[in-house]
Image 1 (cartoon, helix red, strand yellow):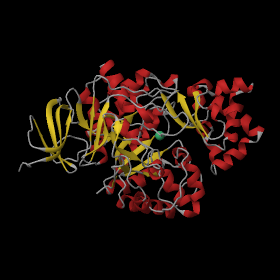
Image 2 (image 1 turned 60 degrees about the horizontal axis):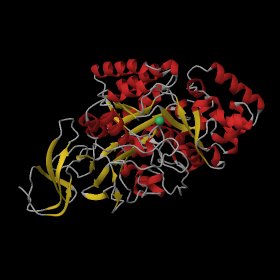
Image 3 (image 1 turned 45 degrees about the vertical axis):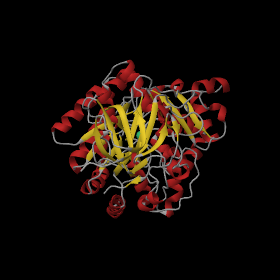
Length: 529
Ligand SMILES: [Zn+2]
């Protein structure tokens, strides 16, 4: 039955529906929060009309890999995602989530999640995942949450570096199961960060069995993205195979010159795994630099007992010289960031006290201070009480392209908007793909790029009513100018808004109009049904 009138009609746009099918000119009629009709020359009356001539109408982008867990609580109006056309963000990635909480170990959880907190204070007024999700009020964009394996481990075992007992394993499974029942979409892991780094493969397989039973996925920041990349991908595949879970390898990359090109091998392995019936995909951000906590440059044993212990140890000159030796020699199984980026490739993105360090490399600061680079990095960690985020230059452009082009790969930001100089991916990921890689370099078609940003992530995460333009779907949409869309953020000026995103709609409401925010905070928490 056709409606008699619409709340909103988008006319004359090039509709790219997210499935990868070729775009077609047409109109989209919206009633309430749904797409009611797609056609040509729709003449029914409507309350509002958008003339999308010369513009692309696409499903709102779904960020597979976000870290807005703290931001959505304390700064729900934060708009860096809307500005780049993202209408839904999956949070709780890399093993970090803000729930479930065991108050007994709260201090350890607080230190653990500091890296994704963006400097925002939190009141920690929740324990379960359900209670945490209830605290998210009127976010700018929709939120879908994963449970962090590190968070679950801390809730049961604190920061300890050992295997869980059978009793602890059961407790972790129960927490994961309860979180899934309360609306989480799956489990994430961060196997380079303590306490995730302390977990053996079996622990993850066991937890993933629980998640798989509930229809959730496993998104993993794998155990190594440089020298041990291939083994780490194999571990993710093994977890998928032995638990039956749907696997997502997060921010796929090969760090360190000596490892460039290995992504061809890992993508081959992923394809083979799919041939064996494992449901596995990946995501990527379109940059050759990554970003994480500066403390990740320290070897794993330094993290035993948490950040305070690590900082205490850093005061000891003997320990400092041991670390320096290990940074030169490496330790088996350790993701040694110094080996793969060098001190010149590690740049301070955010710190609390000495703001003038932001934007400078460790090498540069070391030269200014007339001190060894390693000593300088240790000093900075102590001065800033560990609260330092770095940008790390370690990937090759060719690898980024190889990964991005692969049909199993989606786009995710891995961004944490914050003051200082955060990684520009937090502001420009999607316009960068559409401007640089689609329009300028013609690396893939607009339709394929949009599929990687919409229907593919929607299918993977189980966001059933989103990710394509079709009658009956929720009207989360982005309308952009394909000839002007462009990232404006840079490493030096990361906060610049992109160009070319003309309109963004969430649930049928216009939240961005002619590049200006209007009627914001229309997002909602999406719970897994
Ligand atoms: Zn990660």
